[in-house]
Length: 154
Ligand code: MN
Image 1: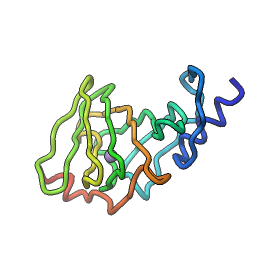
Image 2 (image 1 turned 180 degrees about the vertical axis):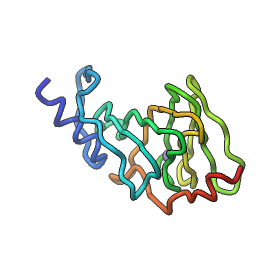
Image 3 (image 1 turned 120 degrees about the vertical axis):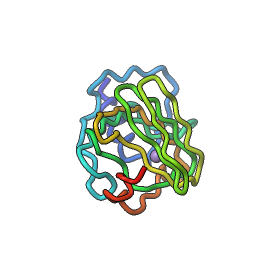
Image 4 (image 1 turned 45 degrees about the horizontal axis):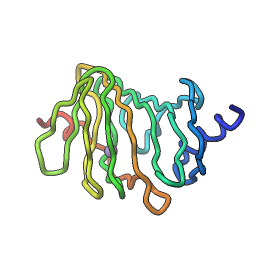
């Protein structure tokens, strides 16, 4: 148990993996929730770490909650990302394509190196679990923010 907080902190950093050989139960609140950085997110976004990354399956995982109109910046993932929508309704958009609506219960796969953003709709909050795979110690390459104009253009 005493390793839980350390492990959760490592999960946030995303750069270090633990060599997990036992089943680990990480209770809700094992790692501190934090506000997402305004550098990579627009609006009010809370990130709660879930599991530490492991050596065999390097990944960052967290529960991410977006207020209405809150969203990620444009970004890519070097090894892909799975989103499991746990509450509300939101949008995911690949650059150059129409956005898609996502709702509680939906699972989304974002392939490696695909430029995209995800977030809440303008009138509904949205929460998803994000499992983001790590390659060469990195799980995302962050780009420019999604402007209000881009967000409104649908
Ligand atoms: Mn993503």
